[in-house]
Length: 70
Image (cartoon, rainbow, N blue to C red; front, top):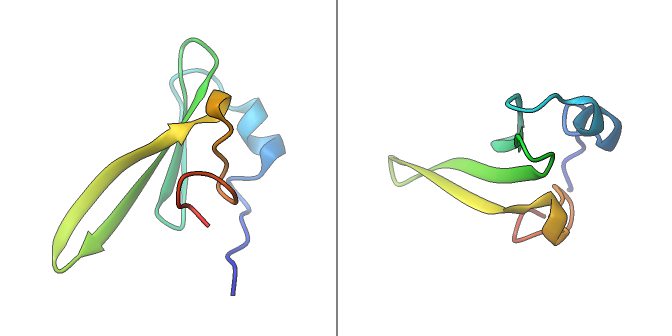
């Protein structure tokens, strides 16, 4: 079943000031100083914490459609 997002809602992301971050379900969105948004994931695999940048908002990445975040 697909996850639903409360914090990573489009309206909430648009209101986020530069330099701020929101995290939900292991996905982090950060508003960059240039106004773009950056998505990254934080997961535990075999006891190792893995952090990966997935994509930028300007490239079309979203929590639902971009770069393996489905």
